Length: 66
Image 1 (cartoon, helix red, strand yellow):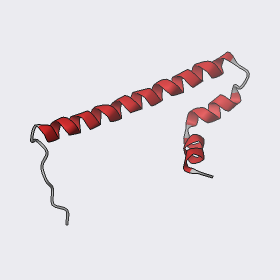
Image 2 (cartoon, helix red, strand yellow):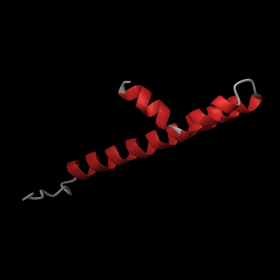
Image 3 (cartoon, helix red, strand yellow):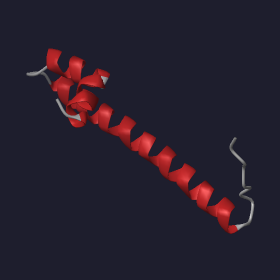
Image 4 (cartoon, one colour):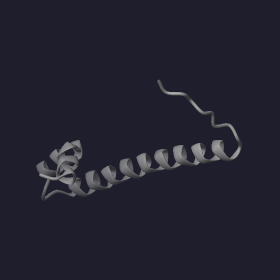
């Protein structure tokens, strides 16, 4: 089992989707899962942008790790 399979099995929507294979609800749940993933992607992208802006403005500080 690869990492992709592990991540797919981890997603709680997959279990629910399997209950409603021949239902209109399956389409709605699939779209909801997609929207959640897009929201998470937006959060990650915003975090990356903030980090890059901080580095450009000289706000990043070097931290010594022991």
